[in-house]
Image (tube, rainbow, N blue to C red; front, side, top):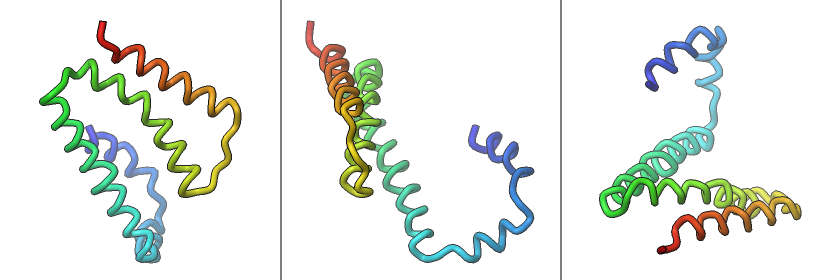
Length: 104
């Protein structure tokens, strides 16, 4: 699937793409490596290990927490603000996950 997506985006690459790539700083490349290794590879390894121990339907409910984790990261790392709607949304997400994962 990734190769098909790449094939469709190749015509959209600008002519000076190679020049732009060569001008990227070391911190930019380290960020790309971080995103590839930790955020993608490690997360998928953990997910597949969990799938071996739990049902997929129970694990998929936990995906609703991802936006909340991103919000906390934005607040801590980027200094983003919090609104009342953000707090209410977080409460709703946790409530939904708690209700969906409780034992009957």
